[in-house]
Amino acid sequence: MAELSGKWQSDSIEAFEAFFQQYQGLVFKTAYLMTGSREEAEDVLQEVFMIVWKSRHTFNPMKGKLSTWLHRITVNYCISKRRKKQPALVSLEEARAEGFDLPGTKKTELPEESLVSNWEGERLIKAMNSLNSKHHSVLVLKYFNDLSYDEIAQVLGIPLGTVKSRINQAIKSLREQLSIQQREVAI
Image (cartoon, rainbow, N blue to C red; front, side, top):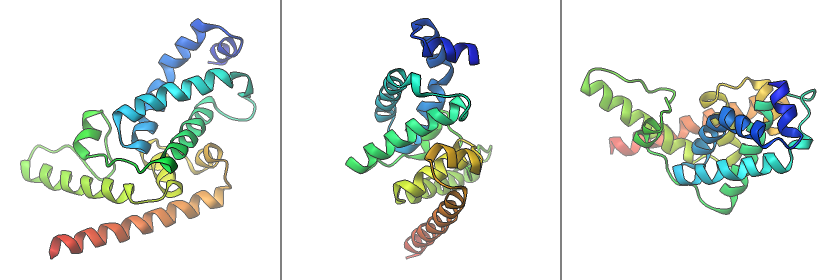
């Protein structure tokens, strides 16, 4: 990969195309989970790779992994877009149709288990979409992209303690939102 990154950094279109093919899934998945829309995620994918091409000379493999750098650009771009516009809700069916397995949901054989699982997944997505950008992004990186706390700190450019704090606050907020949703259903 070091050879590939070196080639695309020195203006090789062919190497950049190979780089795009290798990393487009990572960028699209993160963008989709951050924006809640396939169309917006496709736009973000294009914009992020335009940014990557223009700033290719700023990547330094000695400072961190390429995937961390890509996550950082993607998350920052999505947060910027989110500030300008209210995010669309992602339904569980849409997320699964895009091939994303969601935490707390599983594919089951029994229809009643599937119904409960879908309902819980919808509640989770609705609760996540109610979070602010700071909390939303740490949860996407941690639980949907399986990044470590250290990697999240690098991606977001924040201290490790802040990552842990934001995740704890986000989980607390999610619990509160899910509790409110549960009470609304009970009424």
